[in-house]
Image (cartoon, rainbow, N blue to C red; front, side, top):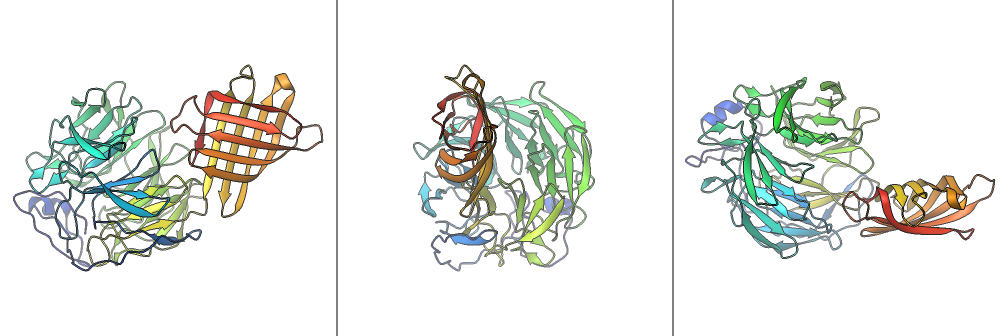
Amino acid sequence: MTHLPHSNQSRTFVAHASTALQPVASIIARCLAFPLLFLGAGLTLVSPCVATPFQWEATGNLNAARVIHTATLLPGGKVLVAGGFDRNGQVSRSAELYDPASGSWTFTGSLNNARIYFTATLLPSGKVLVAGGDSDTGELTSAELYDPASGSWTATGSLTIARQVHTGTLLPNGKVLVAGGFNSIDGILASAELYDPATGKWTATADLIPGRFSPTTTLLPNGKALVAGGFGDSGALASAELYDPASGSWTATGDLNTAREVYTATLLPNGKVLVAGGLGGGILTSAELYDPATGNWTATGSLTTERYVHTATLLPNGMVLVAGGLAYSGTLSTAELYDPATGIWAATGSLNTARYQHTATLLPDGMVLAAGGFDINASASRSAELYDAGLVARVDGRGSIDGQGDQATFNFHATESGDRAGGSLSFSDPAAGISITRGKIRSLSINGSSADFSGTADPGDGSRVRFSVSVTDNGDPGSSDTLTISLSDGYSAGGTLTSGDIRIH
C-alpha cells in the first residue's frame, strides 16, 4: 500500500487495504499510484495538551490536510511543512509553520511549484532547499529556497534531470547531494548531482552504481554518505554504496542482509546506522546495523510489528522511536523504541491517530512532532501529535574557554526528565588551583538557546562547593558558544569557547 512513482499520462488511485502486496515493478509498468482514497470528512481542532512521558498527546491541527509532504526543523525551533497531497488528492503548493510554544500552525508563503516526493534540506544559511518531486504536470527539475526571515520562496537553479523519490543530503562542505530517483521518461535513475548554495547551481557528479529510487542516504561521521537499499530494476535492493565528497565518487560497501525499500535509516550516536522494517519479499520486521569501520551489516533485534512507510526518530537519550506505518493488518498506531545498548525493541505509547507516510520531527525540547499522513481510512489527515520521550531537556558541553590562558577546561552532561534534573560536571583551572571531578547537577533550566544549571561538587580536598553554570549554544558547531561558572568559594570564570562545543537539545 505504498504510493509509488507514476506517469503523468496515467494517474489511477486504488484503495486496497488488505490485499496481498503486488510486485512494485509491475505497478510501475502499469503507471499506477496506490492507495489514495481521499474522504471529505473534516477534523476537529484539538488544543495542545501537556504531554505525559512515553505517551502521545494531541497538539494543534495542520491548517491543511497533507500527506507525502516534508517537515524541516528551522533554526528558530519552528517546523516548516510543505507540499504533499491534500484531502482532495490534489498536489499542494501550501506551506505552514508549527510553533512549539503555542502548539499552533500558521500558513507561510506558498511554494512556487506544487510538489510531492521531493526533498527538503536545511542549509547552513538557515534557508530550506526543496528540489524535484512530482506535480500535476509531471516530474520536476525546479528547485526553490524558503527564507524563514521573509516567509517566502524564491526559485534557484534547476536540477539537471527531473526526478522524484530521490534523496537529498547536506554534505560537510555545505553542498547538497541529490541521488537516484525516478522519472517517467528515463525510469529508475542512477544519476546524482550537487547543489552549491554559493552559486545556486547544480552540477552532475558520479552516477550511483545501480539506479535506485526510495533508498535512504545517511551522512556518516567521516563525511561520506551511505546510500542503501531502495528499488532497482530487479526489485528491492540489498546493495549499498558510499559517496566520497572529496573524490566525487561512489564505492560499493557491504550488502544489507535483507533487500528492502521504504524503510528507515537512523544514524546512532555510536556512528553505526540502524535500518528497520520496509518492504522486501513482504513487510519486514527485521532490523540491522551498518558499521562504517568494517563496512558490514549485522542483524539486530527485530521490530515487534512488521511495518513500512513508517517514521524513525533518534531521541536525545540515544534511543530510536519508530511510529506508525503500514502492516498486513492495516494502518498502524503502534510505536516502539530501540535501545542501542541492548539491541532490543520495546513497545511504547501508541499514536492517537493511526497514520503512515506522515512526518516525524524532533523538537528542541526533546518532544517528537508527528504530522499529517494517511489515516486509517487512507484519507489525508490534518492531525498532529507530540510524543514525550521522558527526556524533556538535555545540555552537553566539552571544551575550554578564553580569559583563562586556555587552561580552564570543562565537560558536562545535564538532563531533566519531568521535574527531576541530573547529570555531571567536571571543571579544571590549574592556574587557580581549581579541579572539580565529581560535580553532581541538581537543577536545570533551559530558555531557548541558553541554559542554567547548578549542583554540588567535591574539589578533591574533602570539602563541598556549590556551583552555578550558565551556557549559550550558538546553534552551530564551533567556538562561539559561551560559558560562565561560579563556585561558592568565590571562584568565577567565563567567556567564549576557544575549543569544543555546547549543545542544548
